[in-house]
Length: 115
Length: 112
Image (cartoon, rainbow over all chains, first blue to last red; front, side, top):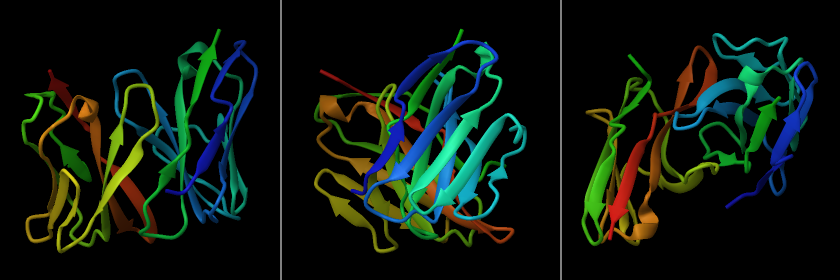
């Protein structure tokens, strides 16, 4: 299957700092990328949908000023967690798909711990 | 009502057993359907797409029933390595957006 690379795979940061997570599609052009959060033993929660060149669409309850998403090219999307707090500690996963209706491929996920 | 609904399980089955999962979706205009598996603390990985005619990949068979709006996954001759969470995913067009909707997942444990 297609390859989506997410970086970093884990990060520990201090409360109040910002963390940037990158999601790259390595062998296809991703018109849409999705960002999810998953808490232990819970299901994936969609945070936002990002189409290349346009503003991300955030799910209800997700603060767009706290979780900044940029999808500047067809192969790269970034999620920045601003002013991180311990409650933001979670597993963040991106996925990308080439066209509407196609399957999505996931990055390896980023385990964020805010201390 | 959730867009995609799955029985969360857990399903605990012995090795060699056959197990089936169902998933229902709310939007009759849904376009495409997938099963993913997710291992603990890992990202979801595509298991198979689900086609209208049904499709099979080794021990795995997926079926789609558009009239009743459900998809199913059948696993034959279960292996220990099949233990995972199985996610039902539906692509829907809603309010002009073309989005993927995930079920909460069904947890499967295959017991020796």
